[in-house]
Image (cartoon, rainbow, N blue to C red):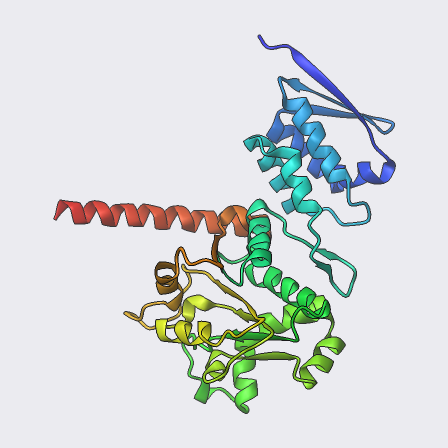
Length: 330
């Protein structure tokens, strides 16, 4: 029988409140998942458990206790527990925590929240063209926007160009009310939302009026050469191979491009190939182009969203396996 071990920590009242969470929900989750017992005696935590469990729990608690003044999210606790279980632990979390890209207008730091997101941000820093591919909630677009705005404010590029294919989900643009701008705005709304949160509505409008920030449908990119710009193509899974080629050949000197998409959520007509899928095959191995694959593990929305994404990933893996087996039987 393995002997029980003990670890002690002393934390401030603010740090204790942060780590314990409302109704002690966070500390109880740590106890349950890492199989330890945590007792608070006037600011001193006594952590007991078997083997390395107390040390791992202590590392996680110290990590969660940092960043005073920031609200601790359940996703952060869940991911920290996952890292401790996998043996990646405190060092990995420190690398994520210290990588602050910028701050929102409300002063909230924008940073990667998972190792997958950290690898994605690092790839954007070191490559001219980066493909961020993964399910909803993995921060593909938001982090790309944060990197673009940071580069713009530092004077590394002279403008930001954000684009999306205007794919209709059951409706034709011509049947929607309003002028062309009001017809395409719904497709570009997620880009506006991110810009407003990071840059602020006033700065966004000022720079838009000066032509330094452009948000437009992908069709508007045809025939242009985009020099000294930070270009983001969102929802790239809804491009055709021709549109993707057109976009990539617009990139000029001094520019950087980030292409984001979810290969599992295509709105293309049946039988139409996705430009994102083709690009993964055609451009693989080319220097200065990186492909970052994000997964359900990198989802940073409500914990239920992560479970939904993983359930669909398991279902799609099972269906692909069945299709392969059925082809072998024929």
